[in-house]
Amino acid sequence: MQDVLNTINGRQVPPAADRWIENIEPATGLKLCRVPDSDAVDVQRAYESAVDAFPGWSGLDGAARGRHLHRLADAVEAELEQLARLESMDNGKPIGLSRSVDIPRAVENLRFFADAAATDRTEVFQTGDRARNLVHRDPIGVVGLISPWNLPLYLFTWKVAPALAAGNTVVAKPSELTPVTAARLGELATKSGLPPGVLNIVHGGGANAGEAIVRHEGIPAISFTGGTATGARISSQAGPLFKKLSLELGGKNPNILFDDADLESALATSLRSSFANQGQICLCGSRILVHDSIHDRVVQAIADGARGLRIGDPLDEHTQQGSLVSADHRDKVHACVERARADGGQVLCGGRFATGLPARCEGGFFYEPTVITGLGMEAEANREEIFGPVVTITSFETEEQAVAMANATNYGLSATIWTSSDDRANRIADQIDAGTVWINCWLLRDLRVPFGGVKHSGVGREGGEEAMHFFTEAKTVCTAQGTTT
Ligand code: NAD
Image (cartoon, rainbow, N blue to C red; front, side, top):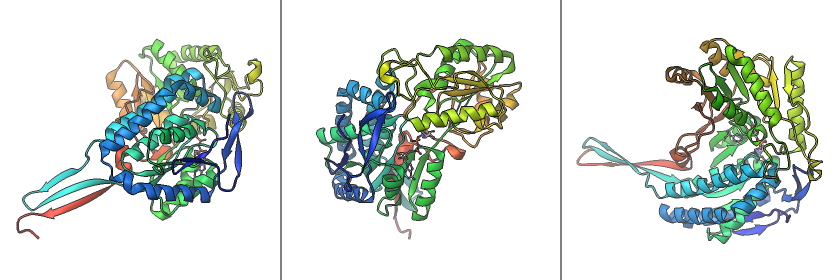
């Protein structure tokens, strides 16, 4: 595969200092390509190109910006199959998932915000007969976007699309672990006629390229998705510069099963919410909390289901579990499982590197889906995000206990409740600290609704109007009427 290049001013360019990072294919452990190890010089070039492009782009009417985004969506859609393959090679996720979720959602993100761009958001507030207030939503300028590796193009476009729709120009950095589809997006942007400099993509590590974006004095807004520790660091750097910040961080989400739930559907979805994308989704229900009357049944079903998942080459159509994203990450996941064992947890299945893979994947970073029981809420495995194919199962007796257990972490991204009682579902939803609560479903997403976390899961909301508000500044123009002064 060819080396990934930066997209600056509509051109594909190598990093100024000619420093590179090796991009490893997780399913094989072999080099896939090189990625620019960009630094502050590259970020500055991207910034200057974004500054030059800003007057033209922000001066277009929203509908015209929307047409550009639709053309980019068309270009991504036309390459759906190739992009899905690239995503799976770069990340290790099953091709079926890239094809049905990651790339279609990237197209949907672009189209959704293309349509949003055309909406006039000016609000009017009449102050009796004394004044008329117009609230305009103006683009901010050059915005910085930083995204993670778990849903590479999906989350990258989730930021790029609203930022551009609102009239900003962009300096964006995808994860250095999964840069390939974002790099292709940069090429497609140029090919589809997006004006040069509107979307600049700078590849590289967090410490160099990432921090250069965060610290850049000319970039007044940063939208970040990634780990909580990184979010804290970014916050400490951006705060004193008074930057607008959106932080979408980690999760340790409870998945609560009551004894009156439709167990068939609860179990099928719980298997998915535990292990989809090898458990590397911030919204995974990594803590199953189950009423004690159905505990044994649930444990047995989830462990059997986990054992039955087909681990294999991500490029094989039949694979259900691909590889983890890197050797380091697999080792981190394994260390978490070992500590859970040391804390008294029973590892019912998994808990080890997967073997028996096809020859191509012998050097890959595969880990068996793992189910752990017997831990209290104070255990690290129930408090800290593991971000791998690992789920804990813990029983409760009362609703009050279930709520207390659900809230017993510093995270608050999402929660799922399985019950046939609407009253109970809504009562519990009210008490849970989370940005999203799913009742009898999981990962059912409407792009219009606010999305984000409370506590250490983040600051701010993305999605729909929330994103359009984040990427604009409100300006109130108050005009006196009649003789009022
Ligand atoms: P990460 O924090 O290591 O990296 C995320 C991005 O930040 C990468 O592009 C990285 O290069 C960059 N980065 C790292 N250090 C930086 C710094 N000091 N300054 C600026 N940029 C820096 O996270 P990750 O390992 O890529 O992703 C996994 C995490 O992301 C998990 O915690 C997961 O829960 C979280 N996540 C959250 C959401 C959400 O919507 N809340 C969605 C997906 C993933």
